[in-house]
Length: 417
Image (cartoon, rainbow, N blue to C red; front, top):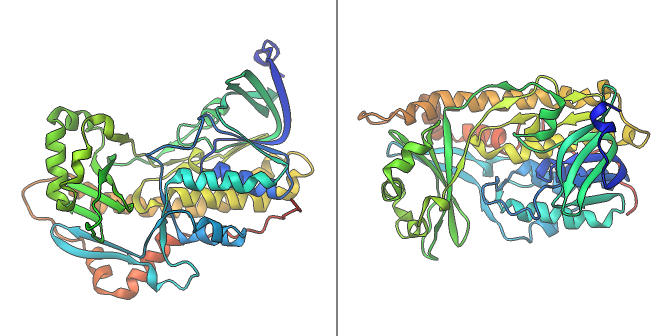
């Protein structure tokens, strides 16, 4: 153990086969899968609960299929949610249809909109039947334990004091600002994004209905999700311009919102201060290397996705499924070698790169142009006109968004609970 480890005198220590850092979609799904396989695993979540209003709420057909394969789908779909089958928008006043999930030959041909905390709580409760799975809330990983060059667990702070979690394998699922990744010295390749997002709620009356998903006007973009009793809104701004938006004042922002989406006129009364608006800093990046000896990064810790397509949650779930498929059997015997851990990157890197490439194409050809503003009317891009005009293309775009590139299916073992 290194010098810093020898100087550390924790109040407590535990040992597990696998320590997963981060209780988001990747961490909770992987924890469930490894617990299901009988692996002694602990999931660390730094917050006391999963309630984070700015987390992604889209559960795509690829994830619904995973829930089906786990025998969880019936209970999952009993949770309150809304279903979206077509992605319709207004581009400079012209109606467009970006995708039609009804054309998919799949068991679940809709996107389920569900608060992410409900998704994560569902996985936590479902995993309680596995004695080998433990979820520790209010437990924040602060550093790595090392033995020579290998990662041997994490140091964490808890309400009861410091805790050392020694583990054969540590898996970083702690997001795009991963502490574990930073402590491991893994370099991030930044790809870049031209926008940030303001995330807020607007009240919805019972008689307010609208199927529009996206709105694009010169200098402005907005996406709205019908969440039943409120609208969840994503207002897109040029990268780094949040201070300029604040300087214009909240009334100006509300006016811009209502101009783009008149249906939100009454609901914007819920925006009483900028405290009601969350800034989401958009990034697209990925790790060239996902591993160190004893350590694997997946989900946003390995590849941050743009909100375009709402695919981040589902890519994270796919990573978790692939990780369990590839490593669960080997983990029952100890820590996989770094070459064995790297099989996850080799499996998942192509879908990640293809998805990010498509997000960059959308950014460069639609988002950047729209956000430049100007007095000229927006022209609908040729590709968007073709997709709108040719319904069979709407099925292709739906497959890319809803199913993704090389979707994963559950093949990891299940032991009796």
